[in-house]
Image (cartoon, rainbow, N blue to C red; front, side, top):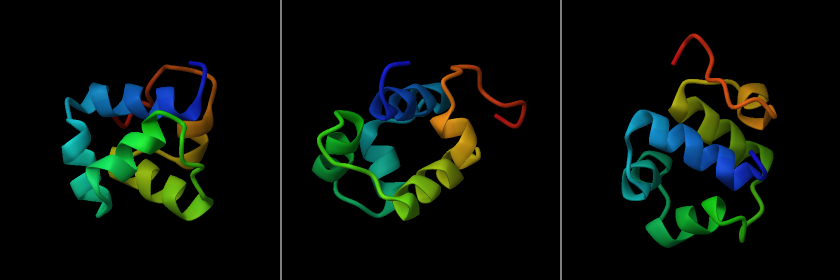
Length: 73
């Protein structure tokens, strides 16, 4: 994976969720979420932690260069 947005998109697709689904889970607008996936918006640690929690993974797993999901997914 090249970017954080790519990794987030990977885990979202792994769950079978739309961008709207995850935006709702994160309590943000669809355009705001879309900017995260397109790497237009920088993600602070709090938001990163929230994204990882929604996916049921750790921040380390989300930031990892590996594309392999954890055994928890």
